[in-house]
Amino acid sequence: MLTRPDPAQPSLLEPSGLGKLRFRWEGLHSLARELLPLFQQHWQEIALDRDIVPLDPDWDNYYDLATTGKLHVLTAREEDGYLVGYVFNLIGGHLHYNSTKFAHTEMFWLMPEYRSGWNGFKLLKYNLRGLKQRGVVVSTINIKLGFKNARVGQLLARLGYAPTDIVLRKVL
Image (cartoon, rainbow, N blue to C red; front, side, top):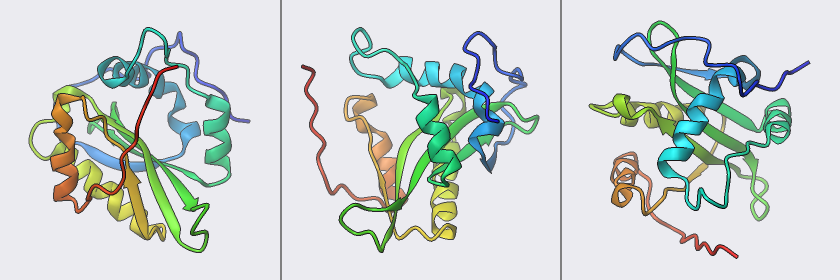
């Protein structure tokens, strides 16, 4: 039986320093207890309208997606195992193109102190390689235009992503 992370429980490990990162595909059940502190940092850094849209992960839905094989999580860890980043991918058919396997990178984040050098590029490149190995033909990803002038868009362009759609948002 899968257990939901306890928000009161801190991460299982403490950071050891800025060593070499290791990327690994992991099941949600094996890393769930470590995620909430990173989710909170991620939310604080980039979420819009935090005053009216609280962080409230739908753990049941995440677990259902993981159980059905649709959620694929790539982690970034220090050499000692401390979790410093993640990429969450939803993989499956598209409502309009069911015979083609699509992946939507639902979210990605790397602790700010690990964003120097090629760490972010390597994380996302490793993610693309893993998606291809999983039979994905088309990969999509959203970015926040207001976060650091959409600088991550330049990184994604180096990885071959190109803008195709515009997402509009309105708070009601």
